[in-house]
Amino acid sequence: MTRLARWGGLTALFLALITLSIFLTINAVWLYRLDIHWLDISQTVQMAPHKIMHNYYQMLGYLELPWVTDLKMSNFPTSYTGMIHFHDVKNLFLLNNVVLLVSLTPAGLYLRGLHRRSEQWRLLRPTQIAAGVPLVLGAMLAVNFNGFFIAFHEVLFRNNDWIFDPDLDPIINALPDTFFLHCFIMAFVLFEAGLGWLYWRGRVAIKNA
Image 1: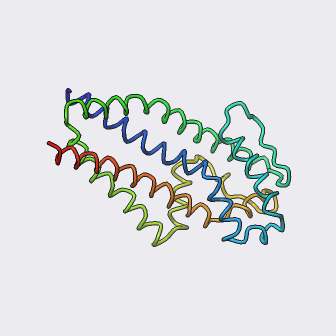
Image 2: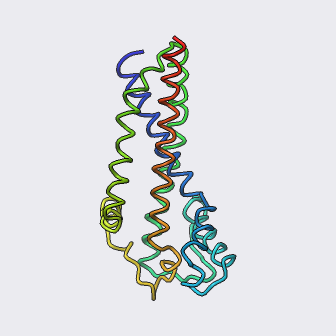
Image 3: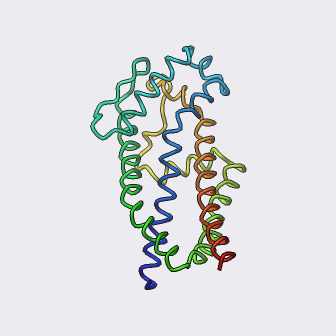
């Protein structure tokens, strides 16, 4: 395998792992259901948990399904700027899903090629380096989550439409910052778990050799 092929395969592998972690986090409906109780969201918005979940499914359906073009939540009106932000988020989610689908096949072929040539040891150093990134980001979350959250939005979005007015976009009351903190933690844990699996495969290959 040429150096270019190795770098291409490794890039596809990490893209697949990152986007898969994000996809699983986005669709972890159980996490939001737990947070409704843990964070007293029902008390905050004065709404029954099942009704909150119904609106959450409506929001998630809009964000995840390309053919859903209008965001309509039964109990949460959305302002014009709120719709712009949700549209921007939808584009990012769909981009993540496209990258996931595109990278899965070359990532799988790369892993199969390493296994066939007994070169899974090549995974050890890249996974060790990549594992440090979530640790650094996790430290930033622990020190100043609000600062990290603001910087995250400033990097991803070209405007300030993500700053919701609760009077105009009451859905923000049902999506507290702590919920997003839990989402970041989950994505980091999933990514680290994937790297751990790759590292384990490399170590086992060395031991078997």
